[in-house]
Image 1 (cartoon, rainbow, N blue to C red):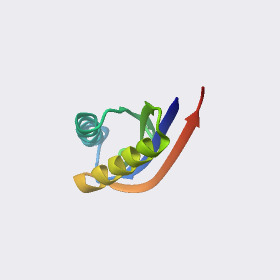
Image 2: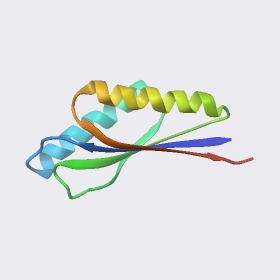
Image 3: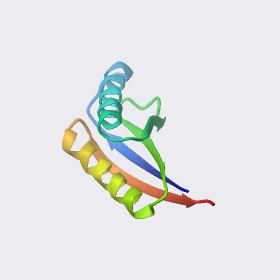
Image 4: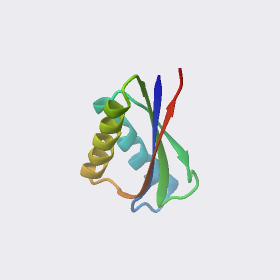
Length: 95
C-alpha cells in the first residue's frame, strides 16, 4: 500500500477570512469532484491572503499516484482562483 500526500501552499487576494473561505471551499470542492482524493485546509487558518491545502490518496502503484498528484497540482493551477507558491509531495510505502 502506498499513501501519497500533496501539500500546496497557495496565495490569493482576499480581504477577510470570509473571502478566504469562499476561495478555499471552491478549490477543495472542484478538486474533490475531479479527483478521488481526500482534501482539507491544513495550515495558515487565520491568514486571509493564503492557505495550505493538503491532499491524500491511497493505492498500490506509486507511479499512478505520482501522476495523479501532478495532474491535481496542474488542475489547481488552471483554476486561476489562486497562485501556487509551494508544493510538497510525500509517499509512504507500507506492507
